[in-house]
Image (cartoon, rainbow, N blue to C red; front, side):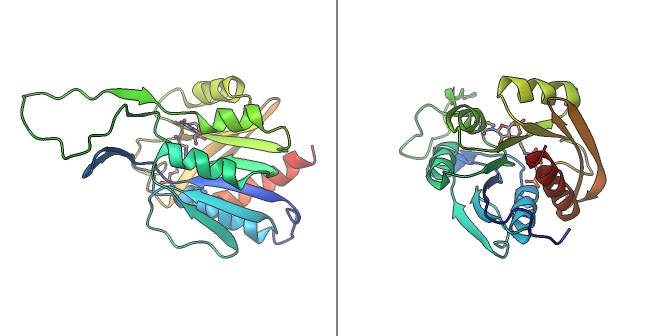
Length: 218
Ligand code: PMT
């Protein structure tokens, strides 16, 4: 669609991985390329929204008409997301680290013993916090990246994090999920669902924004 159905609305999108530093040279990251979140941000901007895109470390150009904020860690992503509020819609497409080193080493960790245990602590769940804290939001949408029992785990996150919608996709497969240019996914909300057949992420983003426009008026 080319209409400006999101005109007057502010949309905050998170995209990409987060990097959790272990020491000055190493980090814990993941395979997210940012392509999905960037496509969603671009699509929302084309539909007339004011878009803030909070991005982890990725190699992608900033979509037209989008304000981009670059971050590295989950903690920084959380800061940047809340700094972008108030907003009308939050779309969490980022693959945020669930754990981060309790204390990053100030200097390079030296190779010594045969094994090395990392002491990791939970990161704040940005999506759950957004859903719980910001009454002014019209829609809070999460993604669920799963390797198995995709629909079941996604529905669980919809309820547990009190989201308006969750977009489930399978990761760890050759074609789709992380890194790939295309994907297949299913949106779940309280009393409905919609499957999106495998397609380029740019096209899926347009179809997802169509659904968001529908749900806004539902
Ligand atoms: O970036 P691409 O290469 O294009 O790949 C796209 C994608 C697979 C990364 C994307 O489609 C996707 O599924 N994003 C969510 C990845 C993820 O971390 O899912 P999750 O099931 O672990 O997390 C569920 C939701 O909670 C997500 O909306 C996530 O942003 C959010 N979350 C998770 C942990 C945390 N500490 N804070 C969060 O906000």
